[in-house]
Amino acid sequence: MIIYNYYELILIYLLVGVLIGFMIESLVRTTGEGLSGGERYSLIVFWPIMLAVFLYYFIKGLLNIDD
Image (cartoon, rainbow, N blue to C red):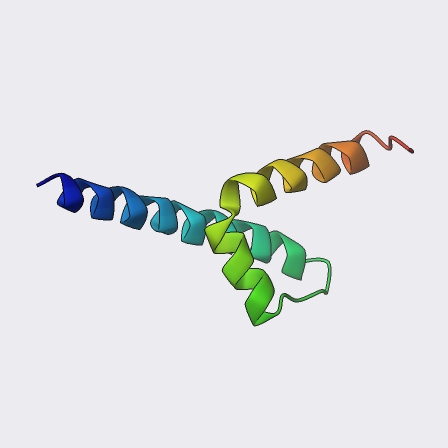
């Protein structure tokens, strides 16, 4: 019974990763760039980190902050 719950959590995690990956890839494609298969895979698996990095650079670009 507990193992079934772990599978559910893993599937939900990956489903959220696919949805967020789709949104980020759509935004990246508007710039004329594309993503490779490895980038898509890492975007789905490591979506919390990728989302944080994307938001950081998006806000940084929106506010025109230079390093």
